[in-house]
Image (cartoon, rainbow over all chains, first blue to last red; front, top):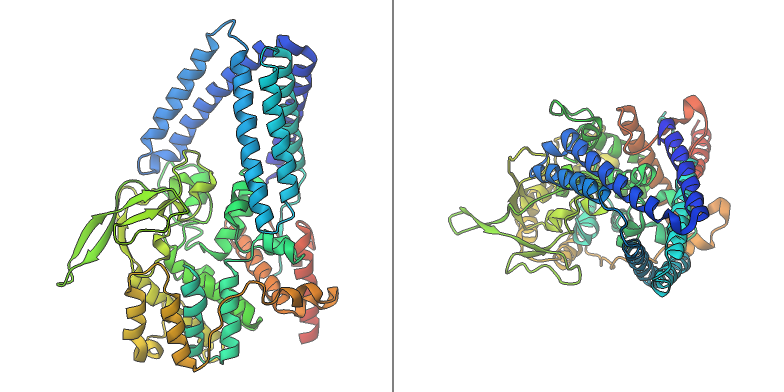
Length: 179
Length: 392
């Protein structure tokens, strides 16, 4: 990781943490902010994909598909931005999907890790259970926008922590010149 | 390549290069261990995790694909399985820096890094020799793919044909169909093979190495043609029987050098004459259509040495390492393997870093800047310092 990447990762982590805390503090009214975030994220992804095409994928066999994907993402983002007063059920559905899928994958990893006698199985199982609990909580409180917003906020804070920790990890490999 | 080549064929090459049965067993064990020495294994024996020479499927699913995670993945796969051919290769105009960096990690045979690898192993024990033989052999099997996750380099498409020779020696193209079920073995009769799922994300772990081409690069008998993602729509014909025979003869030559019979290791040099008396037999094993040629190589190796080749057992040296006192671990079989693996990883990372490519991470020259960075490498530094003190 270059110094610039570390600084970027750290600052982005701080922003994410701030965003997470802010969303939790605002509560149910933050639903529209979350929708705006989804819109921005789709548009940025579209732009990123088009840049990826121009710098890398146009040299790849079949790379034109990447350009089409970028344009579709951009269009989808613009479309999402035009939706007003959308039901919070979409946000809850998004959260249930993300956490349930993540949870099942984590539990599968844990079972495989245990079979291979790796100590990491406990952490994987713990993470899987937490994810599944979050998915179930979303379903139980399907009508509560506040709970959905809290879960989104907590997810954002967790991702921020991971980014900040990554920014401080030691990564260089030592080399001794043969004599 | 698989156990049949890395373990049994490496044993045969070592015997032909002049090593004893016992030495050849240590070399082929180390060569095969490169495919088994994962972080899960290292955790089990309480060894430094930076010595990992491979990643289990499970570990790869867990692996992060942020810059640090990608560097870690790249260090492992580039150093031991996809040795880059040309770190300064010319790249088409207009390509971004990241594309250039990935393109320059494409693996191929007879590179400067191969010379560095074999030379580094010289005088560093049988474990280092085994590691070098694994890397050398893989440059033949894995050529044209890169040891870093990359869609634009490693992807393949529907244009994939197996070439089967008729009685006149003419090749007929038969379409290959791929599926993604890892639990079903490859169906040689119907040309149905397993590959990794298409993932549109550039740095998806599914786009690492030859995953998109399945196990085809690892089968010695197969000849196939396809369009590599990086190749500007020019097809590649991969002739594995020829490549595997080259690999075998280059291994013999490299081990003759490591054995002390040759003073300098050079690229594009093969021990054709040493293999000549057995050429028909070796080529027959290589060309036989089978998923695993271990039994044939084993029988050939046992005829060569007159000794039994015991099957590979991952737990063979575990207790020796676990039970050793902290100060003596480096003198155990696994301790020597770990040091050799870390030295190889450190060397390859350094060469890639010095070429201006950051995909394998940062490298700090100890002689210039002292110790910094990943703590695991401290043991390598201490060992090399002790080793140098003893020899001077």
